[in-house]
Amino acid sequence: MRNPALSFSAASVEDAEALVALRIEAMRESLERIGRFDPVRARERFLNGFEPSLTRHIVLGGERVGFVVVKSLDDHLLLDHLYVLPAFQGRGIGALVLRQVCAEAATKRLPIRVGALHESASNRFYLRHGFVKVAEEEFDIYYLRDWQLPFA
Image (cartoon, rainbow, N blue to C red):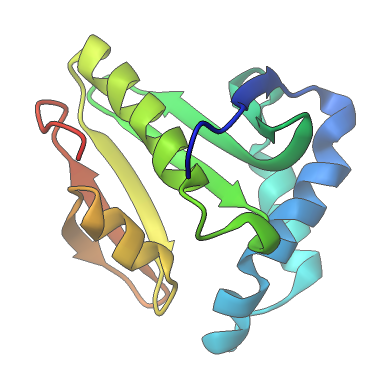
């Protein structure tokens, strides 16, 4: 992506339903692939952990195209959510957002942890950007990225 007008804006409680819809749209294909697509469960799962103060809209050219949630814990940053609408995927937006998260991790000197659904394209994305698989469960794979690793 060349010279994107990418920015972030704060989310609010009023954004919850729009964020749920975006998350469901972004995850639908991956969830269907593993037989776990359930929009009611996806909605409840997101809303149960929704923290507006940690949620940032990803804005490209004035349009909301995704969102990111990063939680700062004692010994790591948790990249809890990073979703880009399917129509905007493959344009380098996720990499630009991840670059910001990695810069935050480097400033705090904390590694980044993230989980991804089995068979999701996000697994290749995280591996391509220096994450290392550290655990695996029935539906998810978990990754860790050292804060000292330069962002490629």
